[in-house]
Length: 294
Image (tube, rainbow, N blue to C red):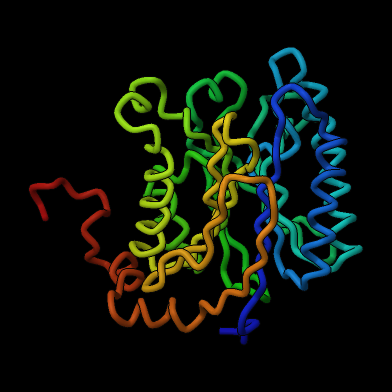
């Protein structure tokens, strides 16, 4: 394994995304202010939440996707200018066919390196509710090898509810998974709120720790932030096996920059639990066998 940076610094930006009251251009300008502050604080990687450039409507989708791709170029230019890696939350991608004609729209996130090069893109596989009316699901998981974090994979929001998505990345060798989300307290609906108004916060905190422990990986999640009366609860965090969350943000818009000393922890967790060795072994139980053959 190539020697990695001992304690890379990660900036979580809980950007406020006002529904129907912003544009991709204005959101990029607000995000850029935070990114510059993170770079000044020596961040190696800066992460924004899902749909960081705003919420499209069916009527505005075509223009919105064009605006998102224009701002993606601006994110690339900013990464190169500041020499910082950027995951710009997720953006609307207009997926084209071989002839350059529109096929469908995808909820897509990107890993932009310090040179401004997009090294990895990921189209959200597990779409949430009405999101399925606007976007088409992706169907692949990939990883990249980074200088700071080693092998890294990307997911988006509702993917968090599916351990299979994390396991797919773990089997590819990912040691770090970054997941931008857009998650509010009311997402559990009236039925969930009636049982427990804090249900979604419990969901996030529980599942993030579970994913880190069950895959022996570092899980980095960045949520949106904003007024509590709009349901924002934040909880952006960096979670490790053994340690649990290193940082956990409140619900406000803001930024947190944290150094992660994770390399030894991940290897020690594997020495104890052998999860990666097991899931890649010839006899691993979940390879299509029926339950009666276990």
